Amino acid sequence: MLSSATLQWLDDLDDFFRKIYDHLRPGGIFAFSTFGTSNMREIASIEDVGLSYHSLGELEILASRYFEPISFREEEQRLEFDTPEDVLHHIRKTGVNGLLRRSWTKSRYQHFIAEYRRLFSFEKGVCLTYHPLYCCMKKKLS
Image 1 (spheres, rainbow, N blue to C red):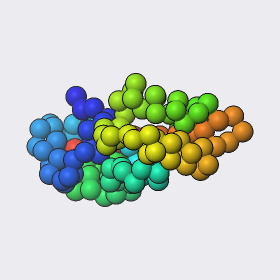
Image 2 (image 1 turned 180 degrees about the vertical axis):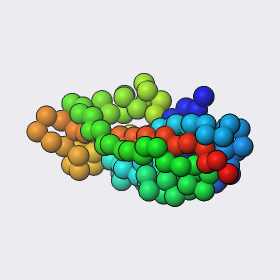
Image 3 (image 1 turned 60 degrees about the horizontal axis):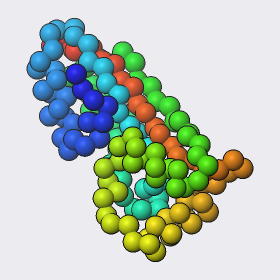
């Protein structure tokens, strides 16, 4: 079992794919989801924090050494919130971002809220982007 919140934290995906390959039977299936380069781009653009996400193409290239592709697909999901404060509450409640660990001063918080509203508002509120990637592969038969 692999959590979708795992892959983006790994530094050596080649080693990870090799280890998965070593544990699968010939023809075994390896499927996972992770996040792509546009994930939570709104937060990253204001706070200058974020993970180094891989693109779907990069994952396919890295995995192709050990696996044959069955299905690789991606989507962007735009969540809508009434306010930037609601975005922060969502992040805190879902635990989707462990990178916002710096202390929030009043001025930093106010800057974040103002910038979020300025950059990511639309007629009904503000948005937050998720960029899930879905990968299904078959172990190569040597």
